[in-house]
Image (cartoon, rainbow, N blue to C red; front, side):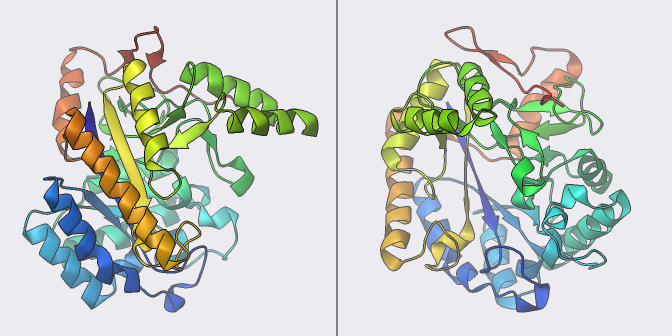
Length: 345
């Protein structure tokens, strides 16, 4: 199996705040993270927001890491902190994909220009803030030359937050076209590398379907879903040291391997490096626990032969599909097909 690490490098403030209220103190802790990755010969992708690119100190830290070959730089767009500010500050507008296509494009151009000017690299990777990705976003990114997206969260719907429904997306990379972001296309110009999310028991697609049906049922069935989750029967796990213990992340990796998935994408936020910046790491003890989970998971990967890959390297690996060679679809040991599907509706 192979592992890529994608980190949302963003401002300290969690949730929607006007750009002038943004600080980036957590970036001062980033060298500690970079040094940890260096111990394992890992080159992560740091996906940066506009406020980070507006802070000279943060830019200096990122440029040093990038110039020394210790990281790759991509984009992470928070619509509420990325100019131009032409929309009202509302929950629906926190999802970039809900804005007018022309405004999406203008914001992404401003972020792209900030990265190319300040870090002196042309970013090819992107992740949407609040996971709010859509067709118009894909078109704008392709026009800018971005070729890799990592905005999809398998088996997860953000409709309660005015966002997309990824309930039927599997944790499998695939090429696609901007008009059909959920449908694998072997000659698509873009590559999707979803966050790694799965279930600890059973077939992922079956568990996801059952969870979705229970979620749409009356309250007593919602309680049943919660009970099944606690028992591990419908336990959905993110490959993230913010939300999961090392043991559960390892168990998820074993499930991924069992089902035939060959790529892992570990995700978290830079704000977890500084206690009190997000709901995952509120105290110094939780900050230390987060770093310990991460280290132990990387030790597990190194010990068991999981290789560490750059996100950019995946593009050349999957480019072969444009030439009509084997599909990115992976069939697991139990026959489960690992590909993304269009969500219902």
